[in-house]
Structure formats: structure tokens, C-alpha cells
Image (cartoon, rainbow, N blue to C red):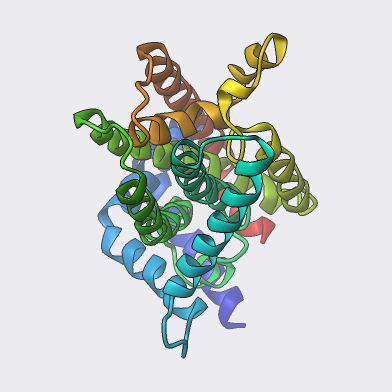
Length: 289
């Protein structure tokens, strides 16, 4: 009864507010969607609190807390580095920084997508109790993954200090690279969150697709290992594109301007398309839960 009452009250408030001054049709939907995004931006302290609360709950009563995740990632990188470095006959001074940066970035990207699929499903209690902006919840996932990546980045720093690749000011370009990954993680989480809320079979399909994408993305293997048509197909891998924006500056490799332009175009196009879909189906999300 509490959940039902909160849902009816939230829908009633929104209907009264929208009918007061917004025209009917698409214009009203677009305005309400934009107001939802603005409301989420104004509630950024709540988004930060929810993200940090998720991390604290995951490691509640643990002595080391999130450091356990960093330790497990470090062990995984060390084991894969020595095994695959030997299989690929790669120099560890080149391969291990590549692997450390790639693994941590991939975990951030995969986390934004996989967890973004359930961003509204996991927030069912919030959405049915109070008229909160729905775009808060994919933002919550993105921020949580960024916090986790910040913990894991310590591993990358240690590896870089050990092997000392040729770094310069270009290493700072990884910061806008992370920002682009976060922006894309937001619109993908918003889009997949809507689709997976409506079609509950999609989350396991997405998880399986991400496992396949891991092996066809240069995470544990070097991009220059491919030649011919396979190397050309790598240019159409969006995961490899965004990974290079963050990883290449950290390992002393320059990122072509065309890569930045393509990433920006994907970000703008995906954001616009998702915003239109969000405007169209935003009001139905609560009913799908």
C-alpha cells in the first residue's frame, strides 16, 4: 500500500505540473525529459551519496572495504601479465602497462553497461515512493563505476612507476578520455535501463555480449598484433575506440585527432537519440517496474 500510494501521488503531481503550462504531444515530452535531467543535476549531492552508499554496502563490515576489489584486480593483472606476456612473446615493460591500463578501463566500461541495464530495476523502491528524477539512477551507476576506477587506477600508477614508459603532458589527455567514457556510459545506461526495464530478458543477453566484446577488444592483447582485414575491423570496434582515448596517453602512445572526433560524434549522436527515446518513454518506466 505504501508503494502504491507513493506511485499514485508521484504520477498525480507530475500530471498536475505538466498540464499547468506544457502543451500536449512531443513538445511536452521533450520539456519534461529536459526538466528531469535538470532535476538530476540539481540533486547531485544525492547522486554522490547513493553511489558512495552502494560501495559501502557492498563491503559492509569488511576491514579493507573496496581495497579488496583493488587487490583482486592487481592479482588478476599480475597473473595475466606473466601468462599472456609469455604466450604472446611480448616484453613485460610494454605489455604489463598496456594490460593494467586496459583491464581497469574495461572493468569501468563493462560496469557502466552491465549495471546500467538494472539502474531502474534496482531503484524500484525509490521510483515508487517519491517523484525523483529518473535520470539520477544511470548517473548513480556512472559515478559508482568512476569511484571504483579511481581505486583501481592505483594499480596502473604502480605499474607505470615500475616500468616507466615514455610519458609527457600527453598523459593528461586520459582525463578528457575518461570524461567521454562517462558521458557515453550515462546515455547508454539510460537507454539500456529503459529497454531492460521493459524487456527483462535483455540483461543476460547484454552480459553475454560484453563477454564476447572483451575478447575482440584489445584488452589482453596488443592492437598491433592484428594485421590485414582483422586490423581494419578493429577500427569499427567502439570499445577499442574509447579505450584508446584513456589508455594510449597513459602508455606513451599518441591518439589521432580522428579518434577524438569520432568519439565526440558518437557521444553527441548517442545522447540526442537517447534523449528522444527518454522523452517518449520516461513516463512509462515506473509502470514497467
